[in-house]
Image (cartoon, rainbow, N blue to C red; front, side, top):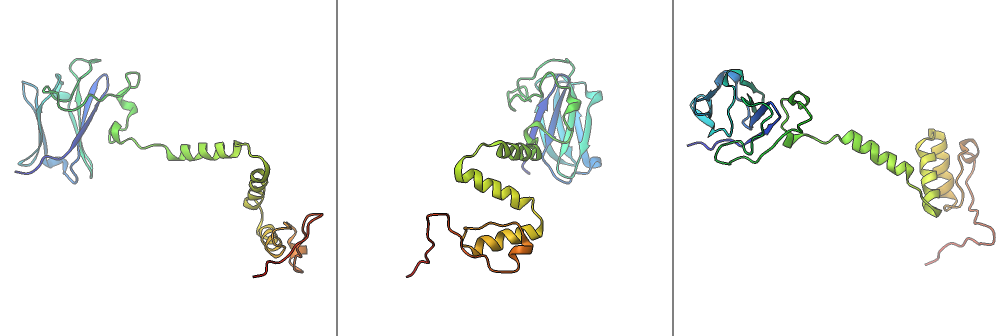
Length: 201
């Protein structure tokens, strides 16, 4: 006997949506049956994919079925609108899941169960960038951040000037003038009252 595929479900004020996680089921091979005693059976040809007595009554003539490459989605209109199911099945199987009561079912993509809704990573990234830009830094951290911003927004010539002057001067000079820096080596220029010495092994 084949193992039944996993399933998921959610509810709104008006509908219960059952998602069966079975890949590649053609719509013509999927058969959904609801008996008078509220027993739901979903078959793929002779294989039983789902079987159980639903927690509440549904309007069987309005049931819709959608098959995608990854799953089967069955929308079950509640007979008693604005009622809440405590579980998917009458025996308590299936934890209670619901869409916010203030949001109609249409606001949730029919192919995406609530448990699989993806985070908006673009918005999260933009917020992180904004937080980083607004972060208040002090001392060397603030100076480094300023130089990073200058480098990030600079032209290729400015970047070359910054890299050449900084590396040749042992970190004591940072110039953005490529016309000047490109013509000669940038000498080390230690701060006043300090002397530069090479490290000797």
